[in-house]
Image 1: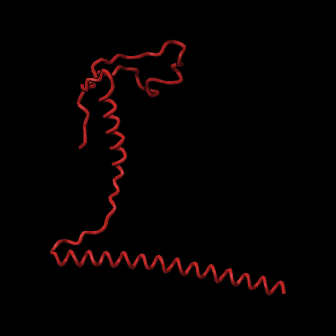
Image 2: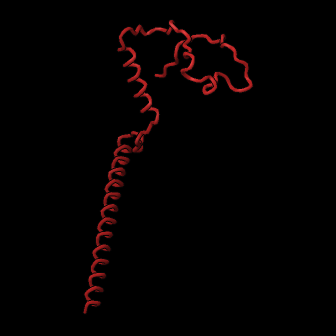
Image 3: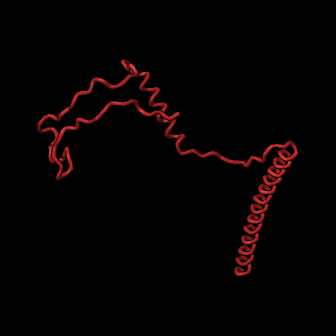
Length: 130
C-alpha cells in the first residue's frame, strides 16, 4: 500500500508540474500574441496615415554612462574654490625626498632608454564632445 501511495504522489507531483509548465507557456504565448497584435496595429495605423513604420527599439549607448560621469566631474571642477576655468599655468616638477621611494622600484624610463627631459610638449585646449 505504501508503494501505491508513493507512486500516486509522484504522479500527482508530475501532473502539477506539467500543469504549471503549460500555464507558464500559455502565458508567455499570450503575451507574445498581444505584443504582436499591438505592433501590427501600429504598423497598420502608420500605413493608413502615410507615415513610415518605425520599429520598436531600446537605445543602448555605452557612452552615456561615461558621459554622465564626465559631466559631473566637470561640474564639480567648475564649482571648486579658486578654479578659474582656464588652462593650467602653474606646473612645477615634484620629486620624491630621498629615502621615501627607492628609485629602483619606480624607474623613470624604460630599460635601455636614456634619461632625457621632455621638451617638445605644447599645451592645447582639451577636446570636448557635444
